[in-house]
Image 1: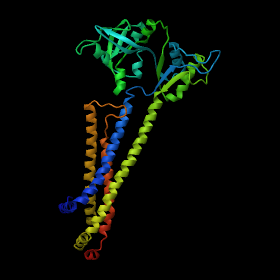
Image 2 (image 1 turned 90 degrees about the horizontal axis):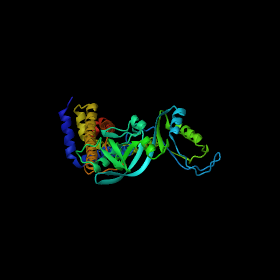
Image 3 (image 1 turned 60 degrees about the vertical axis):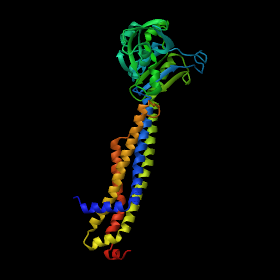
Image 4 (image 1 turned 90 degrees about the vertical axis):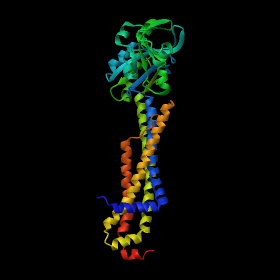
Length: 414
């Protein structure tokens, strides 16, 4: 039940001790503010780093050829292996856990020409499966399909930045021809990257053509440059098996670990996740430590309040006030100061994070290590609830001490 008299007394005490109350509230405010800011900054770091992965399949394994370092079966060291489509089929046959294998071939930087404009951009030969591993946003037209690969069609999918250079904003792109490396290609689609920052810009300065078209134009037969595969299961568990298949097919020494380059995206992703778990634990440790400092200040102030109001409490008890009413009065003041200052700290912290995110977006500030700082409001409110509970506990000891005041002794107190 709402007791107006108690609240009037609480506000009277607070307003008559503005400096003391303000400093106490500042300790609690600063604790929840710093916790909110640290949590939001940690999330911003996580968002920035994870954005580098985009929507890429996290269970991906990249394989590319390097030079051998050990002689084997009559082959000298220093040999560079040439992968083919037969390697792709062998991996699929020998490692059933492999979901998708996407062979690739880099054509390097080629000159794009249309009308009077000429620019050089990266071109890669791909299959229809690559988009399953590194998804992109197809904003116009379509991506490479199986029939394009089967028929070795001269079609091309260009990045948005290439489109912006060679075409007007309202000009139809799909179905137009563009000359690349002296050969005319039909534009089948335009894409944007799902990554952020410079990685996205680099993606959008790239174009894709069917890998079989590259093989035919350059008379490569069934040769490929490298490949990417996704695995249904722990990538590290099957990484060695896939590498062994390649070593056996190309007569590479079993102990030669330099002849085959490989990159386990799942392993790196897990390392980053472990890093951010450690960062979050550290943030919580520092934040809770700051909160505890604020709570201790609340407890100390409540002890001072009880000491200063000993005579008043004695009079109350002599007039019939129960220990429970004394305890509730002290606790209400403690909880009020804690809840209000903590809530303001939460709002200011969340507001500052929103302002940082807004300014970064408005001024186009991009960082691969920081993006969209935010704090989960559920986490913030839970922190505030814990803070209020701690404030209650901080005021409990002084409140119990006040309830035990002897009225006779209290009246003698000066």
